[in-house]
Amino acid sequence: MTLNYVLRKIRILPVFFLGLLLSCSNTDLSKQFQSDLESELSDENIGILVSINTLDKRINWCGAIGYSDKNEKTTLRADQTFRIASVTKTFLAATVLRLWEDGRISLDDPISKYISEEHYSILKGGGYAVDSILIRHLLTHSSGMAEHTNSPKYELDFMQTRHAWSRTEQIKDLVTYSNPVGKVGKQFSYSDTGYILLGEIVEKVTGQSMGDAMMEQLNSKGLGLNNTYMENFEGDFTGKRIHQYYQDSDTYNFHPSLDYYGGGGLLSTTSDLSKFYINLFNHKVFHNPSTLDTMLAPVTYATEQSLDYRMGVWQDEIDGKKVYIHSGFWGTQVFYFPEKQLAVAVNYGQRWTNRGNAPIINKILKTLEQYYQEGK
Image (cartoon, rainbow, N blue to C red; front, side, top):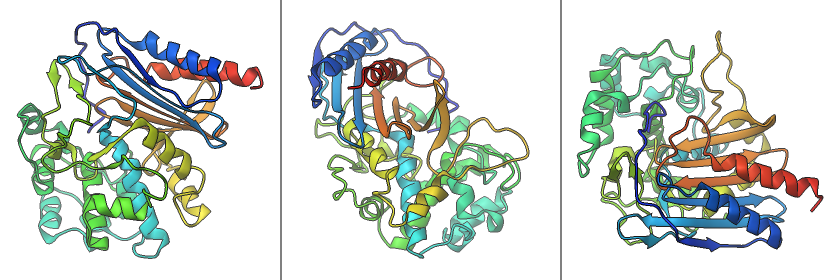
């Protein structure tokens, strides 16, 4: 969902149970990661999942602490799934780029070539220059498209937990409650709506559901992503998915279609997410190494933008080190540090309330820095 939501701080019962799944050859390092997790548990942070991986597999650690359900006091397990929300965009962008490198689409194709006549008409009627919006504009959030999740109707229906949304309804709300944010290609403006159109394009090109197309194009099973998949349209109630909290509400029963068609939609684990980022950034996903260069190419505008977004990830710096990141609304964040060939995936059961990155990331990096300085 949109990055513009502001989460309000909540109070919940304290949590004391610790549960960890460790897979790291260095016992001292594992203990310190465990300590980092313990230090993050609080009234607000009822459950936290972390996975840390390096390309050379010297570090391969997964941890879980707290509860997956604060009311039932159910122990959180490191192998549990969660709604990754906008981190889905990394998977979808990579899928589009896979289709591009196979010659099935062009990044400079207008989206009007692929979207339905109904969606074309809705966008055209809403003031969008649909014939000028290219696939690459959707990938980089530079289409001039607004954000359907900022509409008052969406915010009202957000708490109507079992409302089943369609892609068409969300596109209609985009033009009903907002106007284009600017001209095509002239600015960055984060838009879930742009990515739900990319989901439609993938379905048109492949003849598959978006979820099936992503898993096939990205060779998810070959990469060992055994716990990453589109959630069932009515929801996953098998018990493997954790409870995720928004303000004072348990969102477990919220209908998945709230965030389903490309802006979000995938379930995953922190282990799968860190594994995917390791593979993506080390040329295990695309057939051609140059495709990753295209994905990570900077986009230039006349003025400085709020986020250095590329295609499905953004670039930033943490402690002077380059990092590629994507966040998910419910409390998910994935990082890749090229210098160390290191991926870190984090999920908070209740999204952290401070601005910026997940608080635990600085603690993890401090632990790793000490580890590297000691030459281990």
